[in-house]
Image (cartoon, rainbow, N blue to C red; front, side):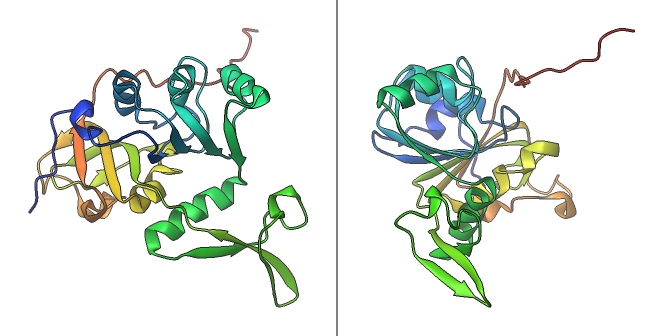
Amino acid sequence: MINKVVSGADEAIKDITDGSTLMLGGFGLCGIPENCITALVKKGVGQLTCISNNAGVDDFGIGLMLQQRQVKKMISSYVGENAEFERQLLSGELEVELIPQGTLATRCMAAGYGMPAIYTPAGVGTEVAEGKEVRNFNGKDYLMEYAFDADFAIVKAWKGDTAGNLVYRFTSRNFNPVMAMAGKVTIAEVEELVEAGELDPDQVHTPGVYVHRIFQGSGYEKRIEQRTVRTKS
C-alpha cells in the first residue's frame, strides 16, 4: 500500500504555481484547509483561480489570499461575508463567477466521475444561462454546464490514514468529498492521521485512491461566520 504522507502544508503545496486552478473544500468556514491556505499565502503564489463554496471572511480562509491579491478569479456560490472580496469585485480587480450551489457541487462531482458536462434546470431563463447551450428533455429546458478542470483539490478531513482514506465530520462533508474526487492532484490535511487499516472501512467517505498527498495539520481555529445566541431571559 502506497504511503502518501508528506511532512506538512509547505511540502504538500510545493508544486502549486502561478496561474493554477484550485478547488478548496469546506462550507463557509467549516472544514476549510486552513494549513494549506496559510502555506499558499506564505509562498506568495498568484494569479490563482479558486473554486470554492465561499470566499471566506476578511481575515480567515480564502480571504487571506484575497488580501494578498493572489486570486485572479473566484468561482463560488456564496460570497457575502467578505468586504475585501466586495471591494475587489466592484473595482474590477477580481473576476467572479457566481454559480448556483447545486450546480457548483454537481460540476465538481462530474469532474470526479470523468463526465465532461452535466445538464441542470438551475439558472434557465436567467443571466446564468447567457451564452450557454440549452436543451429540452421531456418538455423541460436544461443548461449544459461543463465539469470543472482543476489542477489541485485541497481538502480538510477529520481523520485520515497513511493511504489517503478520509473521514469527515458533519458540515465539512458538503463539498470536501466531491472536490477530493475532482482534482488532478488532491491534497488532504487532517486533524488526526492514523496508520493504514486503523479506519473502519464502512466509515470512510473518500477512498484513498483519490488522494495523492496527506498530512496532519495543527492549530485549527474552527471559526463560526455568524454566531447567533439566545439572550438570557
